Image (cartoon, rainbow, N blue to C red; front, top):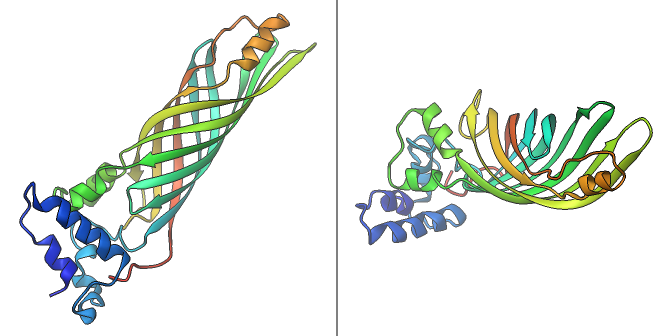
Length: 247
């Protein structure tokens, strides 16, 4: 019997769960099977069984996304936003995200606000491994993939904000940070690959330097750029590195 398959059949208890978790993680990175031929039988492989949906076929998934949404709050009215991002997701659990956001609109008569933002974030998806290892999945692929994608993120951004009118303009560079959450709605996604709709909610704390500069020259009287951001991104995921040795 495959050692990794045997690990999944161990009775779940408070003492066994950490050991079982460690064994399975080791199995993902090294060949600890005592029956190499068994792991080549893809349909019988534990890691392609119920509740996994092929998400462990590759160590890393590269996601490329584009979409838009809006930002609201602080001293500004609702500002439309466009966004693109790339995500490197490891074992369906931890991700590094790099994205670019752009927003612009007229915020007062003759005054236009523009924002460019390059952001970096760490994204954690805590449900996938526990639900899989402890057999807590529902068996409904759409619902399970939706639950597995629930994430929490924290990150920072390099931003350039500007306010301009017909007679003058001010622009400032600054840093900021944000926290957020989100989830993926499977569209054509199967086995963790394909198209999904990413719905993201963030609270952003950008630099107030552009507003302070605008106040100094009498261009704008706002005092705060903190805002809530909602984005809808269509993303496609690609497997990197092929199967694990288990496949």
